[in-house]
Length: 388
Image (cartoon, rainbow, N blue to C red):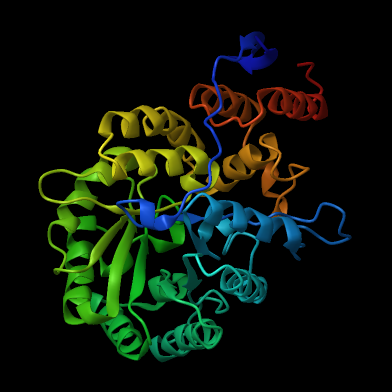
């Protein structure tokens, strides 16, 4: 058994790994009974001479190779979303280039499911930003993505959250945008736990009242809405909304705390998936979805439920720093050669947080090569002056 010394409760204690890695097996999206997108991270270039807080440097080869890995596992790619540090190090110019490159890669395969985030993040919220300005900003990003052949995930807008004076402003913006899109979109309602600037989205701080506004928008434009992803970390709210959606409109779970049971569903329906945690646990998610598609429901839960404590840890408050855990796991698994992030975000979680992530990843069987993971964890410990 492989062992390592890790921080725990202010002390250094030995930990012996027990997990047997889940097999990495190529699969196709059509084998799954649910549509499943992984919101994918970007790989930084650690050798670039830049100011990390001001100018992101991206390793394009590794970033795109990671997307091919997700496609090989049968998962779709939700591109240039918050998992890619959109609004936390990745600006629209970099996101635009990422989208262009990812769409070109997807076109080279013929079997790649991809959808791309369109928002208003090139606007700086302020008193001079009007509702019409926000509409034009959405139109600009949507036009860019559609011109490249991309499908839209309509992201929540910090600028709209700051400028809106009532729910009617949200209805006006979304009605205008949805009437124009070429293909049905996925609307993304990102909760304030992921981005504090989005508190009160849809015009009300009460999520259930906000939900009624969102449902009004969807109901009026159902033929232009493929589905909605809500990221409120509440299975009760997701289920309540799922049951009120118009026929044919999907619920894409964004609940990184309760995804296993939401994807499995109940007698009234189920959720598809658009999840940041699927970036980190892709082999487990792929194997579980295959099992679900073959009616091996207990195996589905056996594979996916052990990943839930890991996900809850990665996405613990302050939730917006979850990207650090996602990238750290990619580093442990040999999917990138360093633990450096766009915007210097590798410093957003503590060493004790990373140590617990390591333990939970082992228990969830998502450390692909335990010996490699131990070596890399020891390197991180050494940087902090701790012997592993």
